Each structure stands twice: as structure tokens, then as C-alpha cells.
Image (tube, rainbow, N blue to C red; front, side):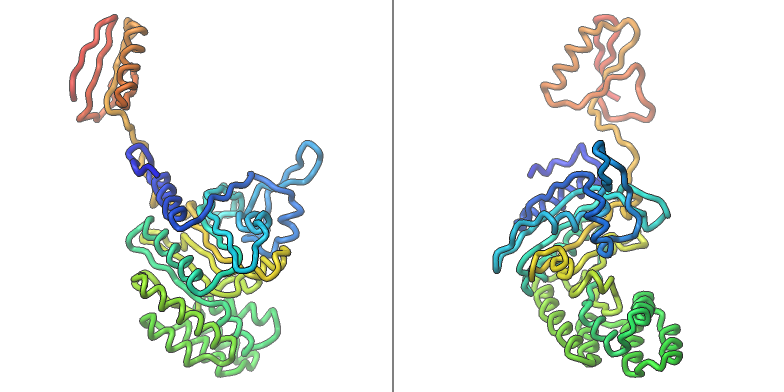
Length: 375
């Protein structure tokens, strides 16, 4: 891929670098249309971020929807996965849904990747490593939080089987609200050991190795222990990739248990108050959409969160200016522009010179005469 980025804006440069990164690791680009049948999204509403979908009727009266999600379409259109096989796809797409920052619909540009099929420990670590490398293309001061929904689910099993109460507990853990969790524990006589583990998870500030050892010691059942075992293996690989300083192990980071069932990721960069990357393991979606026992894992980068960071004022890439007046000969201007184009020189034709311009060549055309100068 040509890496001459001189004429591109920051967001365009980032997208090209992300594409280059993913393609170098064997990912193929996935393309989709702007809309799909509303029924498809309605049947899988539980897997969507937000409940609102923009709909319209097509010329045949069929109810359609502007796509609110890319992952659903990738899973739907994924080829049959043979035993031991996998599909590695990436995308650069717009989705249409409620913004996290303001309560209105937005066209949100996303770049992301998905791996569908057989996903082993190394494959999981590679996906996480690509998440880290993606963040580093945005900012060298980046951090990726990783957690494991298996550990969270195992902990919730120790609390209660009541779905509403589990949801309330999960919400408090995600907000690191240990005070209200302690009150909730007293109100519902929740197991003190489970409450203690949850509070410790939320308040712990330690190195990754210490964090992993701590949650291993606090594991209360086989589900929690299995999650730690997998996390330890993955982190060992990431350490060998020399990525540990960009990773923060935090088991209090949670996600939707109806969607995620394993590793969970949230990525942050300097100067942006919210996560700019999120993703994880979502095998349950595969099962629901008739893909058998196939696994799936991926992440998305949300460019709406990066608007201010990547935004720059309009720049003029002209290497020279052609300034003309009402008496200028059009043929002379045309001939001059053709010569400059053949030489690969970027030019701008104007009837007056812009303010605050320096270090450029200027061609002033009056009648058939051309005067050349440098500012």
C-alpha cells in the first residue's frame, strides 16, 4: 500500500494505516450496503447497542432499516466455517444509531475487525494485540482494559439467580460503586464472600501480574477459575509480544452478559474521555444466528469519539497559485495548468491571492502574459 499521506487528513491517514495493519495479518475487507430488512435487526435487537433503529419503506412497501450495526451483518453473511477453519474480516463502515454523547441519531464511522470460526488462545491474543496496535496508531499514550465475562458471570452466580438483581449488581460493578453494592448486599442478605470479592475487584489498583494473582486467589467457583486460567495464558502471550505496558487487567470492567461470554476489551487514548475501542468474545450471537458452535471475537473503533482529536483545520495543499484577472486569456491559463499537472505539481487557480501564504510559487496571468514569482 502506498504510504504517501501528504494530501490526506488525519482521519484518512489513520484509516489507511489501520487497513494496512489488518491486511498484513491476513484480514479481508468486508463490504455491506447501507440498509437491510428491518426484520433482521428486530429479531436480533438484544445484540444491538441502543433500542432505536432508523426505518423507512422501500418502493415495494417493505420495511427497511439503515444499518445500526456491522457485526450482525458479518455474522449473517459469513461463509460456512469448516471444522478448525476461520474467517478473518475487517471493515470501514458507517452505522446509523444514537450517539453516546448526545441524544440524537448520528452517522458514525467505524473501523473494526472480526474473527469467526475456531479461535484458540493464540488467536485471542492476536486479536487483543491488534486492538492495542490500533490504539497506538491513534495515540502513543494508549491503554487497553481487558476483562473476562466468564469471571463476572461466575461471580454473579455466587450472588443470586434473580436476573433483575444480577443486573443491578453488574451495573454497580461496572460503575465501581462499592458503597451502593455494600448497601445492596445488606438489603438482600447477599453472600458476604461474593460482596467482598466484588468490592476488592473494584478498588484494586495494582500491576497486571498482581491483579491476575489476586483474582485467581479470589475465585469462588470453577467458572471463575477457568476464566483466570484463560486470562493468564493470553496475558503470557501478550507479554512475549512486549505489549504489557499498554494493557490494564481489570476484572471489574463489564459488558452485556447476553452478548459477551469471554474476553472483553475497552480502549482509551489521551485526550478523549470515553472509550474509543470496544469489543470481545461473542459466541452466543453465532449460536443464535445458526452458525452452530463457531466462535467469534472482534472489536470496533468509534471515530465519532475521535472527532476532536483527529480534526484539523482545512488545509490547502497547493504548491503554487495561478492568479488571474478579468483580462486573462483562458487558453494561457489552461496551458499553464496542463503543464503543472503533467509535472505533478498541485496548484490552485484563484482571482486573488489568499492571506498568510508563504513559501509558494505564484503565477500571475494578465492577458497572454504570465509573471512568475515566489512568496
